[in-house]
Length: 169
Length: 168
Image (cartoon, rainbow over the protein chains, first blue to last red):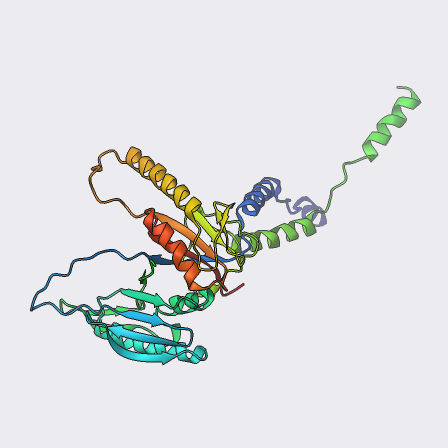
């Protein structure tokens, strides 16, 4: 019995080839690693678009955000009427802006674009925070539901991802 | 066989190859592999952030893609593909050199695109070109807007604002 046990020794696994490949893999990963977490926010320069004037078509939302250092004026419509104004004292006010935009999105589910009119002295960092918050719905808010022009019910997590700069000074 | 030869044979038998215990090394390699896989970036965009550029943070998860890279740091120094081109004034003007560079680059890109897609009509509307933009977070919009204007007027109207992830 003892002799039998001695004969049935556990064979050693040859890990050398797999370890070779793992080592090469590490080398390539080291070369392609990016240790700064970099992402992008897309924006566009304004383009000329034609709007077909028709009695049956709904007026475009034409959402415009006039961003000053301490407030954001939300304007809508072709005449650019003021919809609401948000003061920017802290991050809490951005949540308010988010709610306003969510309301507008729910009633205009087909609309994707927003035009930004930042003030000349607005720091770029602040502008990025605003751009970031108007692109999609916050996780805790869930999805926005609305009816599109064809009468279909649409659920989406996107707010106004197409950011256009009225820029061009 | 002589006694000397016997002794050598015995010595050879005794010297079996020693096995190196590399288990701990392999453990380290595995952990390293996990961390490297986490930091792996699948995009073709490689960025060297210029000195004096502090990127703003955002929650965006969109990955960047290869395109021209324009950077403006705190001192309003303008870098075109990591090369210092000019220093903009307080209002962000003074980028005439950049305008020329961007125009040349746009022509070059359009020629490349035409060579790749010869079927496209030359009279058709020009395709907007992409540009990666890195601005210091404290720069006023006046400077940013003027750079955007320069980029857009040369045909680079698809702006990609590069930001730092919130996790950093």
